[in-house]
Figure 1: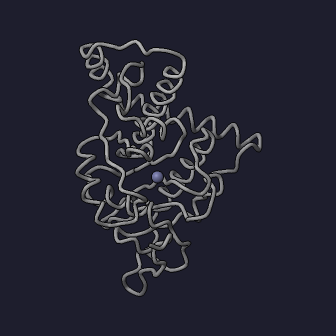
Figure 2: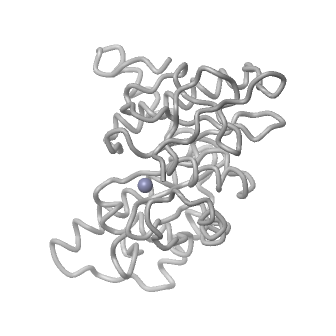
Length: 262
Ligand SMILES: [Zn+2]
């Protein structure tokens, strides 16, 4: 199975012209790649964050295959349609496994405008555990009853896995790809980030605690109460968190520690 999606693009009257909405989405997504880079949630040239372009057609932006996250810019992101075709000529090739996973969600899960997938060490470690994510930490408890699991079927390059993946995800926005890694989705980069961050922190703490001793269990009632209290992932909170990351990124950029997002 090829690593790349076919790079034939839509052409002629099927090409989709760039819009201001796409321009803005490119800047937003490029910035998100820099934020994940800043946090160290990267895996060389692998993994993806994708963002829908507002408009009548299901078009989303994805990283060109072969670049590190800190090399992704607004200009080199690739706009593809839901069949994986770049929407206009002259764009870089994309990774097939990334397309298969992300297009399944963009196509079938209503409101999933942003999808993030990582292979962090603790995220992958928890994904390999028979019992999955522990709900016995501050972050894990907030995720009680909210995490979906999808069984590993190999590298996600077969389109027929899409239906099973969508079925596994259901209404959940926090997903553990078993024996593989973490995946989060949301109405925008802010919400997807927040779910991913909760999972990431829960995984970090679970692995650290398990290596240090016996984990003290929370009752189902307390887990549920905590999950209910956090249920909202209040939009205002999500925005505050993400804005703080944008400021941090801006500060680093000013100091020359990371490149500008656009
Ligand atoms: Zn993966």
